Image 1: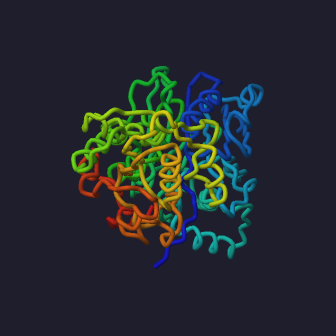
Image 2: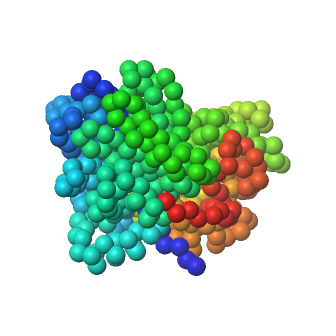
Image 3: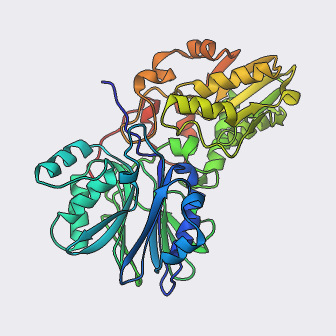
Length: 453
């Protein structure tokens, strides 16, 4: 069965509650900056001061949307926010988050990250009952489910959790309270930090807490629902699922200083490079890593082989990631100005080129071409993750399965396609061995069970 992917994962969420403090929006702004790489195209922040909810959102990066006067207007001791990427057929304005709801039980705001598998079914059922949708986001589906369930808000959220299927995290904020949920499969990440000033914070990556003074940081457990107020937090539904986080967080999505299990993403990537080097059977002159997500693996690869690690590819840091661009034309244009080879480093050299992963193969093909044009004698492409053979059911930003190199070509055919002198991938077994916790490896060909809620 062909899997058509609706891009939902290229996003990140954050929330914070700081008792006796009215600057929560400023803190959430800096937290979102730490995860801006998860979504460069749209952002939004909502705050609450106990009496009302304030909101600001727009198309663009945080620095483009939020000026100092905007943050001053977002008053309150608590705030939530989201950064996200646009999709090819996205109705941008209508899909901006936070989603704000004026319910008769009281207003609330919601942000989410991930993807509902049964979104089409839920949307159809609600439209048949007379509900109106402004956009196409899963956040709006969640908001409708919560608004139209029965009982207190916590009961309505629990009823909503019982109806959804998929990999998702979400935050709900009322005028006084915040609720956080991570789906049973644990594929989408969410972290909780206890702050030294008595507050609490949530974020899609632990790197989001880097500017906060934290006493303790832990993962929100798969299936866990947390209620957070001025007096502290209550945990419900905890421990009912082990879950398996997305392995691509370690390969590509997370910042290197974020955590995955009990290791930093940097450590995992470096170990992947070392493991890749253990099976190396070709001698080359220098090691080059593709910035930024492959540099840690390249450092481990070079260290293990005792080869010089050189900055042979320069990244234009004012151009966003080509992998999270919605169309091929945009990816191609971005790639041409984003990465460039340094001729003085590679000319006349045999090069190990280390990258994090291969999806459609556009970047790999272009990089091999760049290095040859810059004078490289040989290009030996080394990938610090397994071959991606399947698209993702869980909302990760992959192309259709038929367009994945790993599902259409053998390793030898890919090598010829990229015009590399050799090509090696990390095996699934070696990759699984270096991870500190069991992870979802479905895109690498490992199946796992489906969860509800």
